Length: 146
Image (cartoon, rainbow, N blue to C red; front, side, top):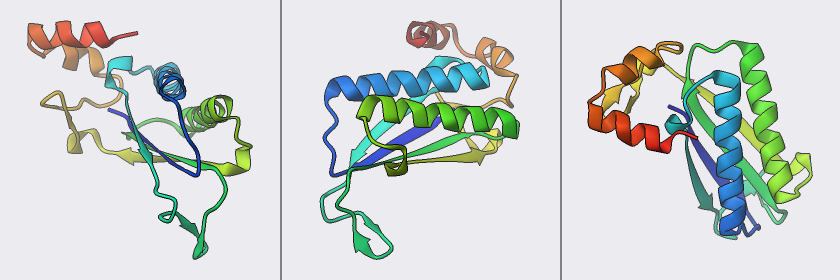
């Protein structure tokens, strides 16, 4: 359901940092939305040194940008807690000041999303959706659950 893309410039993230960030994003998403952790995927992309501009000027500072695509239907209060929690994860694991951290959330209608080969359920209908999956896929997803 959620796909979080972490793009970063002028910064090196170790495998350990990536794991901590991915775990933190996954846990925050699950905590604030109630979604199972097996839905969260986190993708890291390092920007080339000459590929990130702000205001038409090349970025020379260490910057990190998180774009989260999540299912629509959650309240503004939940999304505010989520976005602040995500910022906290990035700051904690990169030691960057908050003014070098960017977090965007995008709502996508669940009817326009397919994961694990199936159209996603509306928020709150995950259990019914999960029970409609094949037994082998249910077992696979249970192994991913934290």
